[in-house]
Length: 221
Length: 272
Image (cartoon, rainbow over all chains, first blue to last red; front, side, top):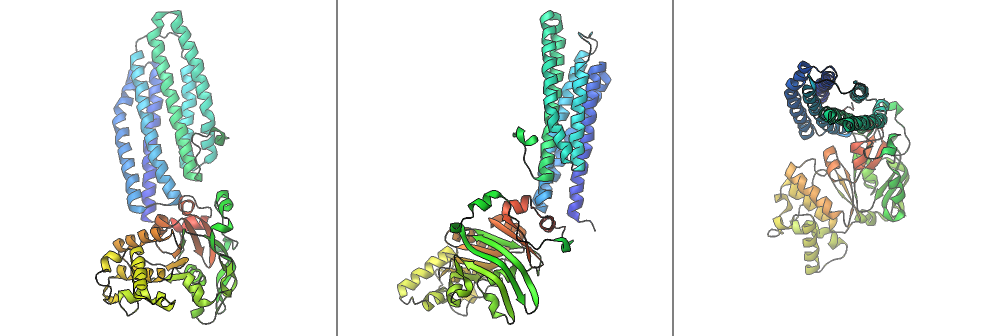
């Protein structure tokens, strides 16, 4: 017989997974909108934002209810605490996808100042990190979570290289500045999405193992 | 599942606990303690160290041996026929078998699940122990009684009716009276066997607050079925199962990330 409490925990996990799907779809569409200069894709991201925000409220409400009424302990307590934090990270990732979608709308109809190479490359890495961090939560896979933490530096390196290149484009001609600034913002938002996925990976380590690896880079090895 | 549970000594959670567990911090310890009701082995080689001036709680399912272990600490089990124990229990450095029984029970007092005030006045309940210990003067007794009733958070409620029968008090008041009575002989340790199980939430909260205050001058060891209570007030918690001490650690560790799966199963309600 499944305890009522376990059903509530399962409901919490299900809602988080539903939100994860919404957010990962939004991230993917926003990136595609930038690469393909597709305003329709961007508009879809904006339309779904309301549902993401609504889900954040529902998940927080469910988690608080669990804490108040069920007094979860040990792994259940860590799951509930991690769910609250992951929920917040997912909502922020949704906001960042909206930012990217708005930047994509801004790019529509404007000729590219350079071939779109770096952004797809960074986006692929970021989407992989997001997917792995969420998979590690579902599968309670600490090694997968640790691999997400290890990927963060690669995103930072790619961002730095892209920044240097875009700055040189701006220096070449003032006409390049608006679009270069736009692309810099896209990269910056992608980097922030990667940061949130590392937060999720850290939360998974806390949930599964009860260890806190935040702010301790050496603990990530 | 339980056949695989180790019979070895309690798991220590952190190196920090080991390093700080100096002799000076210890109040009670059991070494390889086993207990028998006739031929039935109720406790299996329990090694456990209780820190001075802390609250230590024992949790576990019914029949796991936690109350039996508690009663061993002041030899209350000797009131039950055909019992014996192997191993030793030390109070400071003294083996409790080498201590005179009354002296032991004065140093290690006990409060039971159901309050058991004597059929006497409130005053005489608290004064009983001190009188037996030779305190006779009226003012001296009044001072002791007031001090203990203040410490047990009962003074304000009974100061105007000290010579009324203790049976007129509510359940929660009677239990605090029993604690005051135990404190009157200035025990070094107070054992409490599910002291709040018969009380309402408000009375329970008062008892818990009282235990917080008296631990400054008394080591508290309690058995509780209420895991939330152990989580609220105990600094250390031990989990018993089938006569074995499965895990013993800080309460924070036990309730946030226990080391043993059986402990986690129990406190998350997946046990049984």
